[in-house]
Image 1 (cartoon, rainbow, N blue to C red):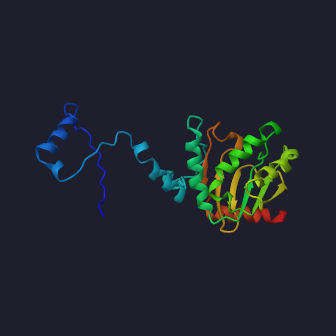
Image 2: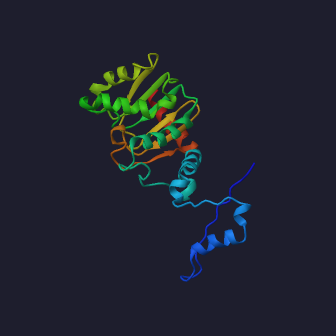
Image 3: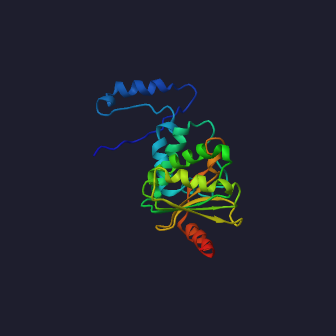
Length: 219
């Protein structure tokens, strides 16, 4: 199997010209043995590899410290791109019969219900059809729309059961599969995704265990 070697080429002095390097490749016929291409923007060129790494290992594997800033999805990103990032993370929750959504402000206002429900279904689409139970842990805001929200989720998954837990004990947003004990941390509620700068990242296994232990009091 052929492998690629990525090189960084820079000038040693201001007098040097990078075009001379290209000339040397042809002069010594190195181009006849190897294929060369220019990576003009490494961020975009390696984008998918970076996303795959982050999904598998979390952002702290790159940064070497705990992520404290919401800095992954931004308003400048097209929603299709944001959706793609979320899908890669959500796929890590498979196989998924159950999903716990911890989000103090999960339920939207009445006029936003259909839009937010559709967005939520879209974001969890990699596991949506296999889900049998969703538990929403929220602070009770806009609870009057919860039954309608549940009904909306069941339209394309008729066997889905949705239940609510009301508490003010949680501040951050977590999406957790309690069966395989895998989870995500999400920096904003559904209505903020794509509108605000926000984080999505893999939860450490020990953090998932801690959160699930905290939820046992509500069983």
